Image (tube, rainbow, N blue to C red; front, side, top):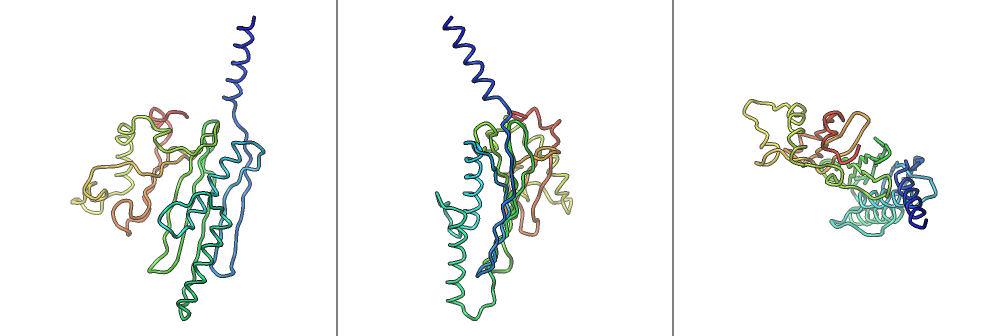
Length: 240
């Protein structure tokens, strides 16, 4: 009898773990014009559960480090403190170069591009301008495990990376369309063969692969992005 009761309890726990976690997001907007110009929009889960708390911490930690001017990731920094530090750095810059008209700027737009019972994907488009010929802009995908709130790497949701790369290469070639017949794929990957990007996310239309500026070819190449439909990508996904 005890064994049967244990099995019933185990089944209930297993079913609870596999239930679709309901999360409700609302847009957060942070803006300041006193000193450096800062405008940040991002989704925040307003649910009262551990998964929502964990996802919110991941997102805000990532955004805070997008503003960080140092080379290394800063652990435990809040978004509020990151903005304050950025503004203080700008004020020091203006103090040292009083005659400059250079205005520092941070602009970050974030949105949920996909959600199912397994994952949530947030796209973050960051623009940072602290002087120079042009500002720095890049896109990142934050993919979260819906059951745990953990952030996932591409290796966590893609199986057979080599096979997936073989699938992706023709899509890449179609997107880039070499300008001359002499241009080879190695020209994009600095003398090496095709490589998957660091940024892989999800949309309603399929799996998104995105190469930011400087990740392939030159700055003039800009952002390279393409989507592999789910009916083609599904055999290479650990869950969908």
